Image 1 (spheres, helix red, strand yellow):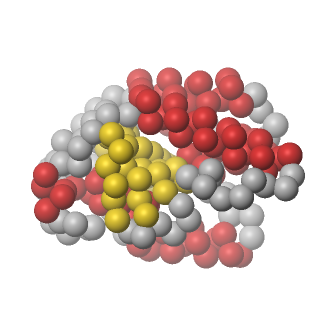
Image 2: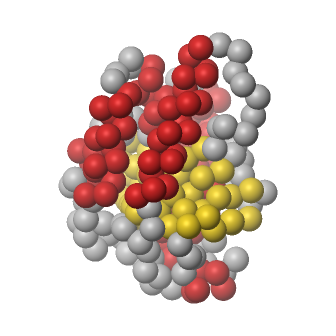
Length: 188
């Protein structure tokens, strides 16, 4: 995906959603890269253990050093408000952000509303990566069920506000709303 820049035009908000290891981050990075704009990466992951530190390092290595990275486990809204209109933003990912909010026992409705407001108010185009967690079995505990429900609602809210929504399965994009830019399609 990180081929030559095409200077594609992205909608003000895009959502790339899929399962674990579906290729969603790679596709989202490709969209952002193809915009030809200076790139910001908002990373919501927290490295709680060696395995997560290795995952974060692999993501950093995959995307390269020419990104402006913001490590923001929760206050994504404040970061989005500071970004210039001629740049582009990748938020990876809404799922880990939601996990951080849930574990902090914060007001989910208030936090999700603030995130949505910030996403739609951001001057730069934003591409959000999120996991589709509703296709599996019903979790066996209340916390996991609450997380699944909150994630499903958040994905729906972001999708409703987005101009482009792409599902990714087995590395292949499935456009659910809007249209992938033609120049980007040529690179798939």
